[in-house]
Image (cartoon, rainbow, N blue to C red; front, side, top):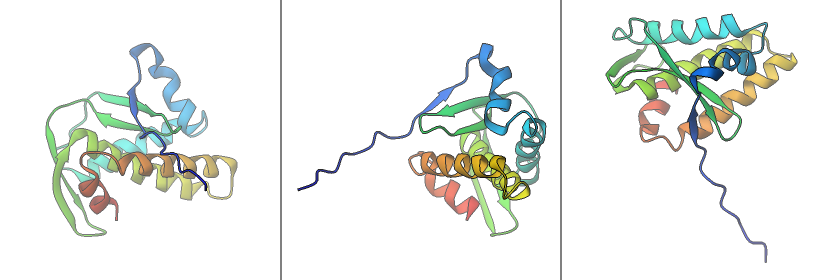
Length: 144
């Protein structure tokens, strides 16, 4: 009989202040880091009238993924034209949504390259984390 071993849940770790400069090149690559960061900010600006800039927190995931989220305790209303989603969620969940949209878009833009493959892996790693997030239902309704 084969025993199934439960994998530990994917955990997020806040990137320390001293490691922030290496975060974007590590996950988007040095060539795409500015485009990736801009896409994340742009997606949240498009999705939420509540977003008006500010400081963002960076997170690494224990499965090799990452995400970015506004560093605020305020909740945000998101509206996704493509699927009719309208809802309110934490800034953390909104950051996950924005990061998923941005990484998915960037992966499509560089599809067929090593960078595209890496970004697709990052997208799936973040989706796996999102499944265990307290606001998973809202996140998945927003990105569906």
